[in-house]
Image 1 (spheres, rainbow, N blue to C red):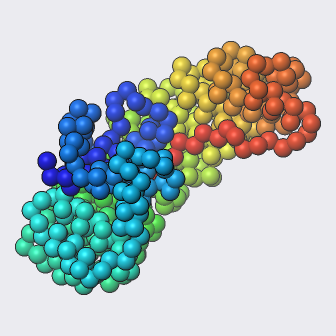
Image 2 (cartoon, rainbow, N blue to C red):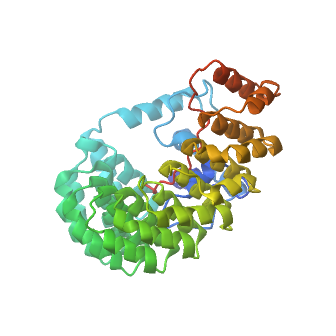
Length: 428
């Protein structure tokens, strides 16, 4: 197998979670409005068959992607299987200024038939930043090959040169879906308001990959001009991925006119991913209307998706109403650990003393240590410390809870832990 293709396979596996390996962090990553996802993942056997015989340099690059992205995390094991020398070569490759010969080689890669060569060439050119060959990339927007045009747009989006704004707007009408989608994404990275009107028109594109990229770009630019258009997308777009991206964008824009639309999506959308993102978006409105709190409280109590219930609880904690909604308090007994933890965190944020009895009861019945700690934190944050709760806490087998009780008795401040923050973010 072509070694570059091996690297791309590994890069792909780095962002595709394995079924059954779900965690809160992975669920948070899964709540990004990525609008061109796939249910097809390479399996481990395919991965191992592909890597055997790959060059150490490509294998090292892909391994770093599996750990923390192309740039690496900075601190790694001193003796990785591919050798420390490979790591050093990769570091120098990502940090150095591209020589003219390197630029020519990478530009030529954009014209190759091999998609992996185009991918690596486009990304390395884009990561060159101010040293990127912008004129040469712009010239490739006129290529007869849609693959070359799409790769050039990818490079321009990574480099973000101001002179690319108008050419990128023009290729929003390209006859290739990939070019239009990449152009919308690139304009979102440049973040110039002159792209708002053409991106808003792209919301009517026939292809969901283009509409979704335009939605995310508008959310990144943060102009409130397209709010009405984004609400229409949230209500009517046939793609759940695109509707989900619209919910995220409306949360980014924080325009109060979108609150009712988000609340309606939380209550009625068929897709759990759309409802979850709508719940998260409502948490961005700290002065949310009663309709938003009502929808969130209903969701945290009765939505069939644990992710929706968890995000709804978090959003109520973000909004911090004067009184804890009854639906939130009742969710202290939710069957899901993460939901209960987010509910307790939210009650700690709200600090409604009327929720104290429910918190004390929930803490006595709680069997998960992390959840019990958050419940105790909520008790302490209300400002009215129950003598019984503190006495019981001092006897707890959980050292964290005993320490929190001692700090409370000593009148010391509450440290910020724990603070669950389910924060969906868009695919870059």
